[in-house]
Length: 494
Image 1 (cartoon, one colour):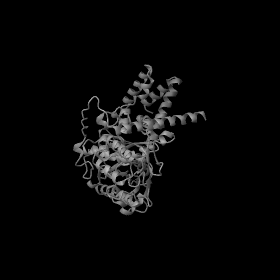
Image 2 (spheres, one colour; image 1 turned 90 degrees about the vertical axis):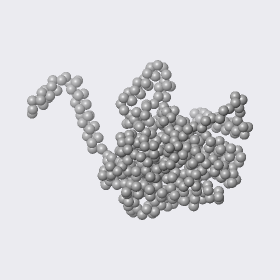
Image 3 (cartoon, rainbow, N blue to C red; image 1 turned 90 degrees about the horizontal axis):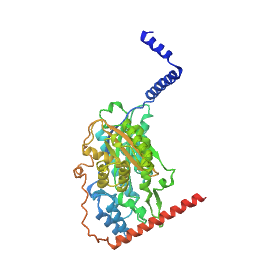
């Protein structure tokens, strides 16, 4: 034993027992933690590349097309048409979003044939583009995940892709349905987990889309009409791999994923639900609670995510601010505080499912206009494309050449149920727009300037039909809230 080692041992022996025991325990705990991290270290997972679908220009759907379709279909009352026109104008959608093929067929009927056509156009296009630019053969795919919330044919969408691209018979395929707008981030999390449990590294293909052909609502329930006004055609595909030799070709490395499910709460479960109206028409009802549920779910979600992604300095700053607010006798202000996530990420692909949702996320998180700009731009250009939204936002960052090597990126999406899912990435290289980037040719028009409000006189009043419509909507919401309060009171009494 060397003299330095002997001196250290003698020093430890001379320490009092109350000091020696905690010191040894701390050292053992440190060694155990290090060993656990080393033994449980998972294979790194990368996003090799991705692709987003850009439909043909003859599928663009502006307000004029929507009004024409509504009038020619002869399914809607004048009041319903006025309501949809009002929602469209307030939705944040532009005049260049894309509608499903049956809108332009002249038949005004939603059929399975149109649904299959919409699915094949989006899925086959993005998969072909992605495999071609990633230099990956379809037979190299070991995991296939296809997500579409509102359309689940038989054979499945995953089987359609396997058949079209002649994939191997041992490919592990999964079809996700009913996951809502979170299916894209959920699919990436699932792909990473599936790759890590395999013995050999491989490739996972995640394909996300939404199908509106069979889910267009022809009734007059106002809660179910909103989906007609904001949901549009969109598909995307991402190639995930844990092959270490492809790291130099990959764009991003997956650092962390987090999924939270709030379906145990009745309000969260019923915030967005597929149902029949009074006349038997099937559609998706978006209730007034959706925005509130999204805010509450996000607050719980980030409380779990924050310790893993925020720097220690920001966590300490947050704790200090909360303690200061409590000590000042202001618990409400303390409960409303959130950490500054802009210190953890350079880029954020937040859920752009609607103008109200973007506003809620921005207000709750304290984000300024530059942070929510990509979400607003995506909603304006493509509408709500459901599970592929975050990849369209990522394409926007690359079209603007904002992504630099080492940048951290946060994908956040919400889904029915109610779910929240996060993917945290690190850029491995500077990224510019690919040849198939859907923003090529239009990125220079964003951020879009807000329209200048028309000057109004002090005695200005909206048209009579708009006043009556707004009064009726307010009355319906009040009646609904009263019924909900009565139900809660009856439940408490029972």
